[in-house]
Length: 221
Figure (cartoon, one colour):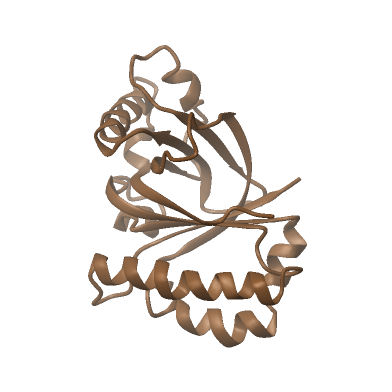
């Protein structure tokens, strides 16, 4: 089973979004690609960055701080198993090049990293689709199948992936949608929030929502 490590966070204090995005993609992303070339045995099998365009932070005080502050990015890295995730972050290359660079674009005090199993419910209609909506729900939220809740709606989306955690952590589930454009993602966000805020739960208030542009920096071999 492939492991999908997801990192949720904000940019470094004192940094603009443009500065954050430039460093994350052009500098840190390049180092990760160098890692993949230098040590393919320990490096991620696939690598994608998702740069925040718009979103909603969690309004529930019980939600993790990261979700209440709002998200600027979601990073996704794929590994063979949980042991590979740990080993990848302990190599000389990682400690010499990647770890020191993280503080240059990430607020490390408020970042969450968690391994997930991904279920590809609907593949994106085209490989060129790169706008996504993440619905990130914290542990303790009522278990609601968001995919089922919006299945009968008229809100369009191209692809859907449901991510469930492999180990206990602050995140309970991440719903990941591909959309054709940012306006479509905005409409979908509004609909997902309504679907979670029903009579039996205010799950929409505890979730964080992020509309992002996906950069598939390494699609795998």
